[in-house]
Image 1 (tube, helix red, strand yellow):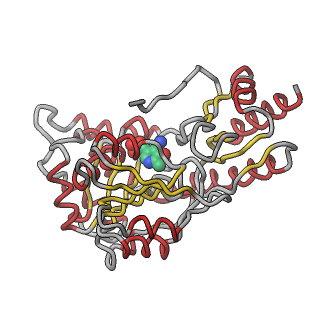
Image 2 (cartoon, helix red, strand yellow; image 1 turned 180 degrees about the vertical axis):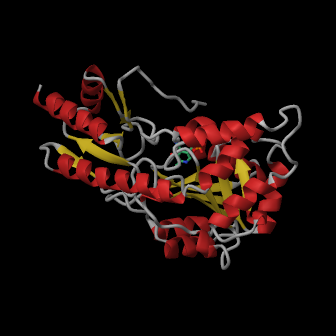
Image 3 (cartoon, rainbow, N blue to C red; image 1 turned 120 degrees about the vertical axis):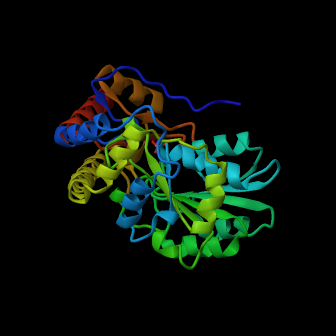
Length: 342
Ligand code: PMP
């Protein structure tokens, strides 16, 4: 099998991993560190990290019994696979999407059924519904906004898929803050939904490795049986509790990324030989008439690292650029124009 790999040359402008360009404010870091200093590192975290689960639940108007916390949302996605998928079970995935799902699915022995996006990179809801209705399907994973396309699936369409399948439906909302559409409100009527969120994107804490899932309490209990105990350390648990409360800061930063995304999209749109796709995430997918490797390496030579996604299905001409600080976006747009003119 091929692993999850990343080509990562050293470039001053790093727009390849959809990270947040803003660090956690220093004052907040100090608060977290001060609380960590006052705690006993010789003891395990609480058997259930109730305080942090409660703080996260509150943000969604839900009790802690709906929440599981992970060492990154990837860990929780893996736990959901391990909970629901055995050798030979079917897993339905759109394509292209985040490559980790197929990787984890193959490790679990799943038979992966892919449903290509429509030509405009929207979700093919009719085909997803049809595939998901098969009796051997244990899991459907929908990434919305989708990585690497930036497209979203409407909650009513997710509800149709959840209705059609006997399996669980994971909605990976890693990029929620940049699109503003969530499926969490559907949980009441569709208890087979599992929503995952991360601290790695809008919350600006990828280095801490924190994510969580929101599910029906009965489903959360089953996933908890599979998740390793004490998977998140005491320092991260403190950080999660403090970061989740920073709603105004998160929104202010996400709003800046959204407005920069619009500016980058419009500039790309006006460049001859470049076709950007509308995005609801903190990145923009674009296609080029020129070979991808020429543009990708031309940008690296000019100090800008983006992501070559040309090996993803349907995206033979695709590249993905993360939206960074205004000056980083300017550096990317400027370098791209130079590469195109060369
Ligand atoms: N889901 C999606 C769709 C992503 O793009 C990423 C980051 N590449 C993740 C999850 C990873 O999240 P975490 O850092 O919380 O493991």
